[in-house]
Each structure stands twice: as structure tokens, then as C-alpha cells.
Length: 620
Image (cartoon, rainbow, N blue to C red):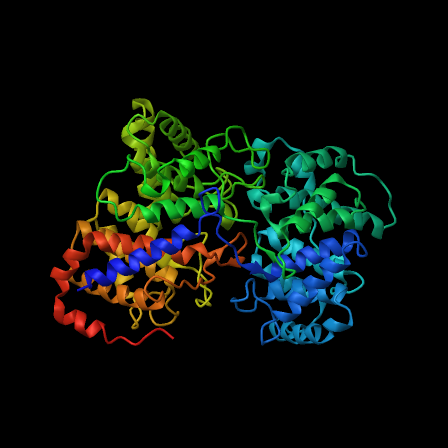
């Protein structure tokens, strides 16, 4: 069994840590990991725009890269990530161009790593390796090669290795984009325009042609119109940097987009000279925190949560809903983005997250403001649903490339939000909800793997070298959704069996039994799903697994006081990140769910089993 006092102490401690993470406004900002990739791209952009003016920033960034190079000579996306060819090429190129003599040793070590991975430093071989990594999706392969060409690491004819992006397609009406099957994902329109134009200018210069691009005046205005007030496209240093350096390379150093982009980079640099992958995930972190803090509630939602007795979090969340069509993705009003900053874009993970959080924060049955906001959010998600019944991230119908396809994690999250609000919706919308739910369930059933698992889009596990997927995250999230509908269904039983069979010997979870290390995040996610199902469909096997998992989580977090994050997040194009809030919120949620079913676990496992659990070795 689980010691009730031990569980409550750890839960209380973890809640205290989570509540202490709030900012002065009362919500959560979180903290994203620093990124070698972001730092490399930002220093190149600043160095190209004005090397003298930005010398200090460029020098600090170079020092950070040198200090955080992996032992094997490469770089990963975070300081906890394995070396990968994309980030290593970017850092190697940035240091080659701007690092000077102090970077000589780092550049040499990086070149050895690249030679070992690619086979040589031949520009054509490097280009083929990058293209092979991303396939037909040019969202990231073309910018990488462009930075290498700018930095001189692809030789004197480096731009020959940079594929032409069809920037002219951006001149078509926005609603044509899905039909045109652009070679970039829906959120990469700025890169398509800027890098495509830069490549075309370089090609013209190669043949000594000075003909103007007749489409550029219109595309230039379009690019400026979709740049957010902060200057940061998606609040992301890499995308903003790529657009900035492309414009400089095209002879557009004085373009207003460059000026705003530079301002964004200078505003978001960290004290140590590095940049994060994105500014923050404030909306996402806040909705995760609200859901976690409500996990141990025995009553129904609708009376608010004690930590938000003044309604500050609820008002803040309501204020983050988009009321107008988004200029970037052309998304209709009604959704939420991951951040409260101007570079955010409404998406289908943050929108259901906000809907579920608002349901927990309701001030009462007459909270019409929240209900109206929820109605708009639900309609937004229904309009986003793809023909296959699944939910994509940003735009409907952009399924040609992986990061625009329907995904189980987003679909499951959406189903939970729809179910939570269904009774408060008008009759006509309810009928749409029911049909959307039916189609969403059918999608999830089709997407279940033979082994019973589901694979998410936005989370991975770097220790799974063959596919880098994270079935623990995906399966846990889908089980919460399908379990609310029918906890005894065959699909749910198969998913639960997968989670139970993939628990590591130490009691925790990674993403493959005893082949990936246990992490706080994955263990907490698995425990949440299993505890939820245990409350509807008790199982002795599941109870024993929950007891083992609790002991591991209790030890790993030092009784809910210490939370070491792991790089399991994907930020577009499989760029790894970790978030300080993740292990905290998911631990609070898992322990909250466990506290609700603790009595049933005691009855299923018994005192004798718990005595053996106490002898588990401590986490290294």
C-alpha cells in the first residue's frame, strides 16, 4: 500500500513548490531551457546586422557555446541533450565565422564530430545529410544550410547547397496554402518569404543579373505585417534569427523586419549570453498548474480554486483568448496560444488546456463570461478538426508534413475539453460536439499502435535512438481522454497494459522498459493515467504498479521538494527543450490523483507488499 501520511506530505510539499513558482501577477511563467541552437542562430544574425555594435553580445554568445560544448565535440539543443548534426553544424558555423582565435579548439573538435557523423566536411555531403534528416520538410533544413553558407563552412559556393524556397507562393491568397502543399509547415511563412527571397537574390547575383523581383514589394509588406509587436516570430530566437540573417544576405539590412528582429534578440538574451528556444510558455504553464492543483478535488468544478480566490488567474486566462483573426496563420478568433506575448499563435494544445483550466476556475454556475469564452474556444477547435477526425496544431488541412498532421495528444486533449463543457453549451453546438467527439474517438482508435500505445507529436525521448518518440506521454494523455468516456473499453485496457508493462525495474517510467532512464515527468504522467483508470476500473496489477511508482517519484523528488527537468519537449522540427515547470506540475497532478484512490490501493496491495517497496534503492 501507499503510506497516507507520506503521500500527503509529498503532495503538500510539491504543491508549495508549485505555488511558489507564481509570478507577481499570480500566474505561472515557467522557465524554458537555454538552447545552443538558439544561441548560435542569434549570434550570427546580430553579427551580420552590425558586428561592431553587437560585438559584446556576439562575444558572450560565442563564449557560452564554447563552455557548453559536449565532451564528444558536438552540441545538443539543450545542455542535457545528446549531440545532433543540426545543432552541431549551426554552432560550428557560428564559431567559425564569429568566434575568432579563442574558438579555434572548439571549432576543431566540432569539425571532428561532423566528419565522424557525415563522413567528411565536403559541402555536398553535409547538405545531403541535412536534407536526409528532414526529408521533404524544408522548414529547418534550408535555414540550417543558409546559416552554414553565410558563415563560409560550405565553401565559396555555399549558397549552391541551399535549396530554393518558393517564396512567390506566399503571394497567393492565404486560404490557398493548404492546397498548394507548401514545402514548409504552417508556422514557417516568414522563413519561406525571407529565405526564398535571399536565395533568389544570390542566384541572380551569381549570374550577374540585377533584375528586381516584381513580387518582393508585396511580399516585403506581407512579411512586415505578420511580424508581431515584440519582433519575435513565434517568440522564437531561431526563426527570428533566420529571417533576420536572410534579409541581410538579400541586401535588405535596413528592412523594418530586421530592426524589430534585432530588438527582440537583444531583449530576450539571458545574462549568461545565451538564448532560450522560446521566450516563455506562460499560458501553457498556467493551465498545467491549474489542472494539477485541481487533481485531488473530490467535488465538481465550478466553485473556483482556493489559490485563485480573487479570480486573478481566471481573468488573466480569459484575457489571453484571441478575439481577432490571427495575422500569421490566419486562425479565426477563439483560440489560445502558449504564451501571453505578441509572438504567440493560437493552437490546439493550449486551447483545450485553457478550456479545462477555466472549467476548474469557474466562480459558479452563473459564470457567463467563462461560458461564452468556452463556447468560442470549442467552436474554434471544431472548425480546426481535420477530415480524418484528428486535431492538428495550427491549421486545418495542412497534413502534408509531420508537424502539421493530426496527432493523438492534441486530439485527446481536445476531447477532454469538449466533454468538460458539453452540458453548458447551446443545443446546436452540442450536436456538433457529439459528432466531433465521435470522429475524434475514431481517429484515436485508428492511431493506437499494435502494442497498445499512442505516439504524441510534441514530446519525445532522446534515449529512443531509433525514433525519438515518447509513447509514455502519448499513451498517458490518450488514456485520460478515452478513460473518461469508457474506462473498460478494449482500447483503454490495451493502453493501460502498455503502461504497466513498460514500468522500469526501479519503479519509474521512461519511454521503453529498462532501455530509457526513468524521469520525473514520464513517471508522473504514467501515474496520473493509471491512477485515473484505477478509480473506475480497479486492478491489483495496476495498484502494485502505482505503489512502486509512488515510491520512485517520492524518492526522485526528495519528498516533493526537488524537481530536476528532463529534455522531453519538442519545439517544432524536433528541437529538444526542457521546462522547469513540467516535473512540478505533473508530480502535483499525479500525487493528487493518487490521493483520491489511496484507499483502494491499500486494499489491493496490502501491507506486506509495501514493506518490500520501502527497500527500493534511492535514485542516483
